[in-house]
Amino acid sequence: MSDSIRFHLDENVNPVVALALRRYGIDVTTTVEANLRSSNDEAHLAYAQQEKRVIVTHDDDFLRLAAATENHAGIAYCHKETRSIGQIIAALRLIYEVLTPEEIQGRVEYL
Image 1 (cartoon, one colour):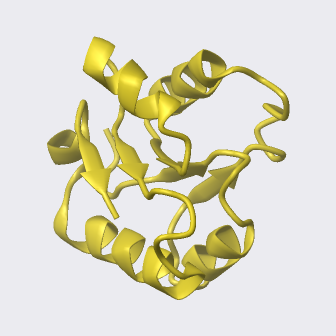
Image 2 (cartoon, helix red, strand yellow):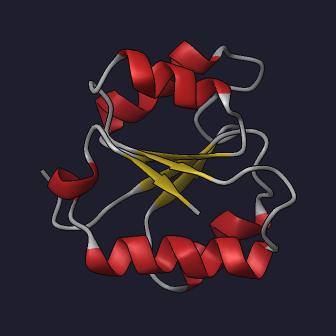
């Protein structure tokens, strides 16, 4: 497994977040880049698990999926419109800096 967390942003997360994280050298994919536009949440979860990426989402359906299985690379959840883009980026950078992929696997981190 990789030494660093890698992220996957679902389609509800502003793509500016991906651009900012990349400026810090963080590996991140978006829904469009992964050809997952209009795919269901299970498809996103399967992609992220296969690619060992933490899903970044505003969609509380992922919380229900996480409650049903720990077989995912991790979920970073932020309730929509409770944090600014800058706050989301800062929180994701902190997760990236302090957690390993093994530590976040099967967990939900609330931003």
